[in-house]
Length: 290
Image (cartoon, rainbow, N blue to C red; front, side):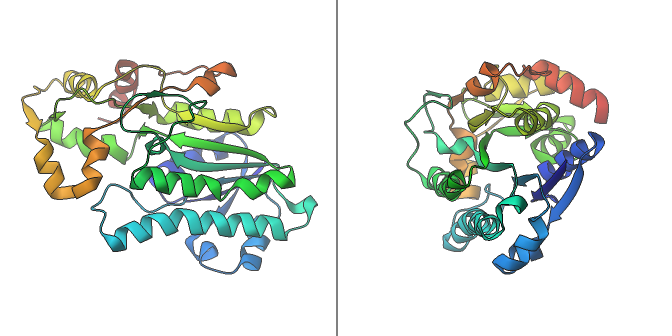
């Protein structure tokens, strides 16, 4: 199967592309240059794709000043709009069968419990970005293209990402919980993430919104305790909320607050997580890379 991917140079994009190649797929890289070009240029790049996976987006965890807010929003909304316009400009025989668009669990309120069938969404900046991002895919429904929106949690994997940044700190004995540590930590193992995408590609009935998070209710302190234990290091410190507020401003809420998010839709379709809890996830990842 020919799979076109945007955002392929990012942490998730690199891992997913490797997985898809090993699974026997042919990849079409949608580069930043392609997304900065015209609709017709992009249409030529994707006209042979059976599947399009849109992962493009500027990093969110940074201080949200005016310039960064515009970059975060446009890197998602404008690129998705261009992809959709490029698809619509192609003839039906050159349209993909499946379009998988990234989103984030930040679309939900920062308290409460949610699954894909929850209708109550957040009202802050990140939720606004996610809603605008997802709305750009709506025109694809009129083309008969199977659309899957994946609301992604914290992806833990090898060679970078959140875990890659935290392990050196914990190995130095400086790791600890953030604030109270009671805030939810909705994560997914990179292997389960890739398998979930594969599931959506190859199951013709899969359509709609999917939360890509593990089924275990995990908190920040559960994660930090499991990581410290796995690395045989103490967990002596607490990162105060005010310090994160000084560094990240409003974006610090991504680290200090959170909601409980459930992968109900995936589980209803029979998807089995290989790494459903934080202990199994870290045992696998730490054993492999550290």
